[in-house]
Length: 258
Figure 1: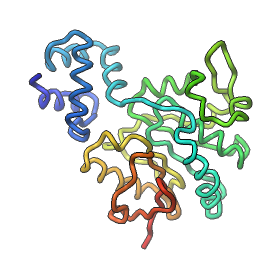
Figure 2 (figure 1 turned 90 degrees about the vertical axis):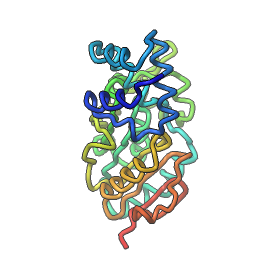
Figure 3 (figure 1 turned 30 degrees about the vertical axis):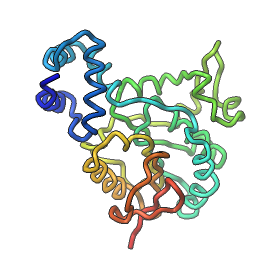
Figure 4 (figure 1 turned 90 degrees about the horizontal axis):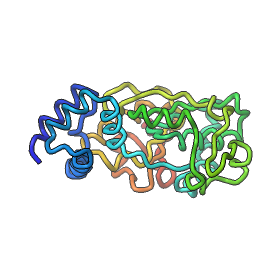
């Protein structure tokens, strides 16, 4: 299917997403699958349609951003976060600034609220949650989840922080209120500053090495002096010292101030 280069330019002008930053073969396959599913034959005809139809555009953004999430994804890493990372952060700062940088449909930032509630009163917890996909964040604000997405959560969290309706679970307002959602394009926009803990998990795998390089440097600048970056289970940083980051545990990197 021809026309991908022109399509990338048009998409960047329309929504500010630079498809050059994504691994091309993987991204082209996803987009061409979506084009075929919607019964279009070319990139041109598909772009014309999403340019006029907000529902099609929202579907495109949602498909592009690959929203796969669950509460306490990779639970052993959440245990390390609870046992080692957070206690050390609290030594340096009694009130933590925490950023879930690709929050998708909300499971990650809400997991953070629940975990931190073991240490702080709920009204002292505040999580910044950002994503490029407003549709995903709208689902997060609604806060309704399947039983499957809760499988890794400690049972006491399910009992304390959810209401069950038929086969679904709705997260309680007292958790929702602790999360501030905001749209951020990680490649284009400014990052929050002076963060104690940043989570960017299961996102980098979709980006080119050049895009990762930009993002790791921006994450470094966004951390405070003792801050920690928590990455996904397939995303260990090769040569983290290039970004002035130092490993503290597997999947956790501290800002290196040397």
